[in-house]
Amino acid sequence: MTVVARRQTAMPSNRPARNILGDPIVQHGDPILVTGSNGFIGSRVVEALLLHGFTRLRCLVRPSSNLTGLERILDRSDRASVEIVEGNLLSPDDCRRATDGARLVYHLAAGRGDKSYPSAYLNSVVATRNLLDAVRANPRLERIVCVSSFTVYSALKLKPGALLNEACEMEDQPHRRGEAYCYAKVRQEELFRDYAHKYNIPYVIARPGVVYGPGNRGIPGRVGISNFGIFLHLGGGNQLPLSYVSNCAEAIVLAGLTAGVDRQIFNIVDDDLPTSRAFLTLYKRHALPFRSIYVPHALSSLLCYLWERYSLWSGGQLPPVFNRRKHAAYWKGHRYSNEKIKTQLGWEPTMSSAEALSHYFESERHLRSSR
Image 1 (spheres, rainbow, N blue to C red):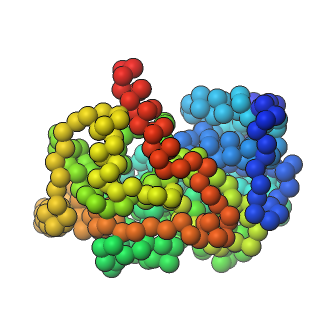
Image 2 (cartoon, helix red, strand yellow; image 1 turned 30 degrees about the vertical axis):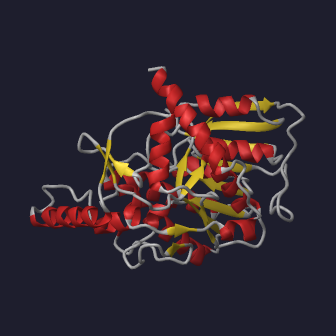
Image 3 (cartoon, rainbow, N blue to C red; image 1 turned 180 degrees about the vertical axis):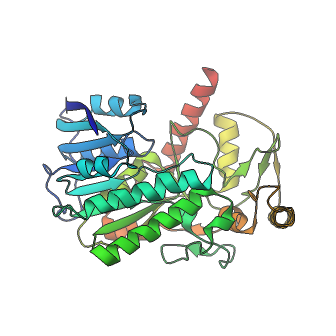
C-alpha cells in the first residue's frame, strides 16, 4: 500500500458541519477509512463526512484509479487531514495496513462493472473477505458499513404494487438472475453475516436503490433497455427506486455514525419517487429527445420467460440475460419506502427529487451537446 498524498484541505467558513441524530459512535478526530473513495458514490461519501466535520479520513484507491473527482471534492472541503493511499483489497497486507487504527470503515469498493461471475466474485467477495479479516484484528473498530444494492432482493413472490422494504427476501439463487453483480452482492452480504456471527464484527448494511446524478450517465435499466437498436420502455407506470447521489451518500454516512443500529439493513431511496413513464418523458424533454416503444408488462414478462426457456434449452448458447427473476426485480412494479432511514437515522434528502432530476437532466444535456 502506497501513500499518494496527505492533504490539508480548506472550505469557506459559511458551510457549517451538519448535525447527527444523537452522538456519533466515533469522535470527529478519529480515523475513518473509505474504500472505493474515488467512485461515483464513494467520493460523495468522503464529501459528506467532511461536511459533518470529521477530520481524519483515509481514502483507499486502486493504483490505476482516476482521482479527478475526488481531488475536486477535496479542493472545496472543510479543513481536515485526508490521506489518499493506493492499495488493492485483493492483498491481505494492503487491507491490514489500510484498516490499521480505523474506528469506522465505509466499504464501497466493488466489482460494479464486472460482467463475468469469476471477476465479480473476486472483486466484491474475495476483496471483502480480506477486508473483514483485517478489521476483525482491529480492536479499535466501532463499525463497518457494507454498501450493497437493491439488486439483492428477490421479487418473485411479491405481487405487483406490493411494498419492497428491508424485510423482503433476498435472491436465494442469485446465479439465475443473469447478473454477475447481483450474484456477487448477495454473496458479499452473506459473508458479512457469517463474519459477524463468528467474530462479533459490528456492521450495518446500506442498500441504495438506483443511484443517479452527474457523472453516472444514461437511463436506468428499470426504465427500459436499448439492446436491440431501439429503446424499449418496460417500466410503464412503475415507481422508480431512485436516490440522488448526494442524498444517498448522506444516508450511508449516517448508517455508519448513528448509535444503536448495528446489524440493521437500510434501504436508500428518495422522497417523491417518479414513475418510469414520468422519468422517460422528462428525460426526452430536458436531456435528449429520442424514439422509444412501450412494451406492456404482460408481453415483456412473456418475452423474458421465452428467453429464459430458450437459454436453458440451448445449454446457455443464448446467455440468460433476460429471465423471470430479472423481470420481477426490474419491471414487476413495486412501491418503496424510506421510513426506516428517516426514523432510525434521522435522514432527510439533501435535495428534493424535482431539483435532483433537474440537475441530472441538465448535466446529461450538457454532456451530449459538448460531444
